[in-house]
Amino acid sequence: MDTLDGRKLSEDNLQLMRRLAHRLRKKNYTWEEVADILGLTLAAVINWGKRYGVGGRDKDLHVSSGRRGARYGERRTLNLARETLLRDEILRRSPNKLGLPYAVWNRRAVQAAVKLLWDIDMPIRTVGEYLRRWGFTPQRPAKRALERNPVEVQRWLEIRYPAIRRRAMAQNAIILWEDETQVRQDAAWARSYAPRGDTPEQEHTVRRPKFGLTMASALSNQGLMRFEFLDGSMNADAFIGFMKNLIRKSEQKIFLIVDCLSAHKAQKVREWVDANREHIQLFFLPPYSPELNPDEWVNRDLKTELRTRPATNHAGTLKGMAYRFMTTLESSVERVASYFCNWHVAYAGSMQNMYSV
Image (cartoon, rainbow, N blue to C red; front, side, top):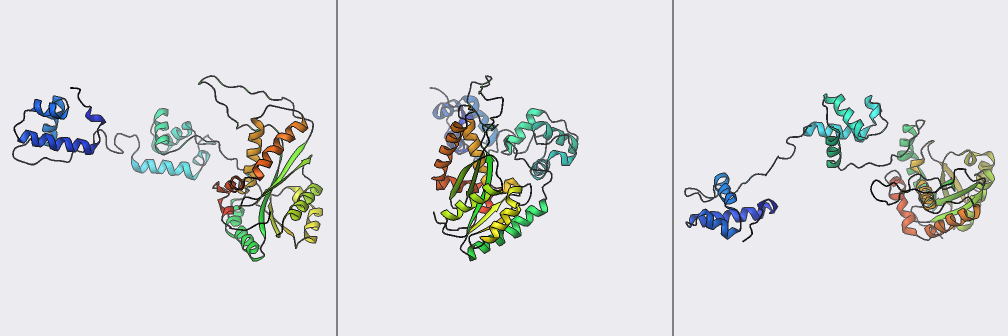
């Protein structure tokens, strides 16, 4: 009969078979007979007898087999304490904060950090094994401006936005996050399947289109979406027009959170908002902090959608593709609400506000 490969059996099954072998040997079965009954090789059962006391006449079976191979953490370049320290360094700060000539944590940067911290020359393959073991994967980093003030960001998260939320609840107002983006097929993160080693190609226009098209949008954490397209860039008049449409479609007062674009802070805009304070109020995100605005993810999805479509320099065609995507998005409450699940903007998704469509 075919023999079993004990290496493929679970430890519980192996222990059961060792106990059975132990009993058979006590009943004077030979090693050959024990191996034949269990379907194992003769060498395997004899090895059990030597290692675990199987068949011993003067003692019971020693059931503790131990682990096969190296125990957890053995034979590694870094001990557990150093592993933990290195992982924390990667999570807490960028490589240049350690004095390394890297902007992101690639394998070379991790390798250099090991050399710097412990004077260990770790092979690049071993670096990859550590990263995989920790569950780290290569990802596109989110951009962060050097001019961003972390104190202002913390103040927004801990003081300013919670205050806005309380005021909105007290006044039965809806909180909307607004942003705008140029409608172009210039996203760099679209992907295409192809055979390994055969890089796919995608046609694109070398010259940027002469027309200017902007999409302004606003969304709530309950899945409400509003959008419109503008010819040219956002300016004070266009922004006021967008806010008028928001007010017209809402039965609640609007707390509109925007970035520090000059058009948002124009004198004309401030005067108009002051004259319509019973309908709308403006609040500004910290400067250079686009990651705090969930509407940035809407812009990303729109550009990804356009990038996957055939290249065009025709304004009507491009606007049509963008309009169809935004119309579909507007009707999907769940998808709009999911933009608040990203950890950067999770703070904005906690308010269970109601809205009127």
